[in-house]
Length: 239
Image (cartoon, rainbow, N blue to C red; front, side):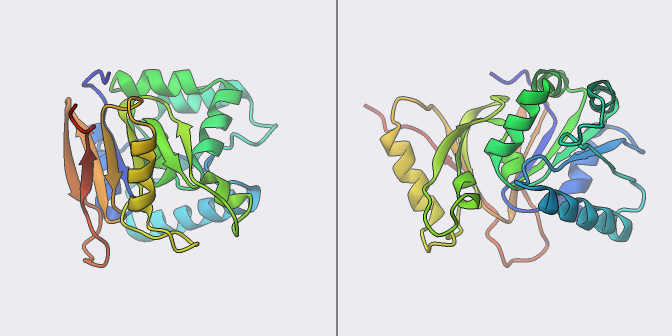
């Protein structure tokens, strides 16, 4: 159950000026300490590329904020320093990638409980995109295995942080690299797992779910009409 204090912007696709501005606004700080975690990225090359792209993006689009990065995979980064960064952050931004990889890093380093505590207490606003959005839910229907064998993989149900008590699929309206409609795959998974879930959400690539003061609303994540911008609610069939 959510505490009602959570402040979250959960995007079905990527980050944008709109979604970042919404997360900063929820933080309540005019000059927030914004911390970025690229843990969902499956390897160092992709984490480095993501950090480089985000640094450039903030410099071009949001100069009022200078982001700081978590380096959870760096053995030279003391766990106390990581904890201090998380404790002082006004906004935690979690990138896309694989939900499974991101949560595994948090749990192995022992920071998952600290992150959950600060989020549920309303002390740290969240911006999550794609896998970075799915990680906050009870369960996610994930394509994490596509990074293992891109030519032959299946979706899997992966546990998340459980902050939002629902199942989730990001990029809900898209088709995957193998030509399968994600929404069709998700509906089948919900049917196969009947009795295990009470609510489920499909967040489209152009949409973000905003949670604030115990309420939720849908935000169009981009000014472009290229991507659908809805959040689809699933509930179990009665009887």
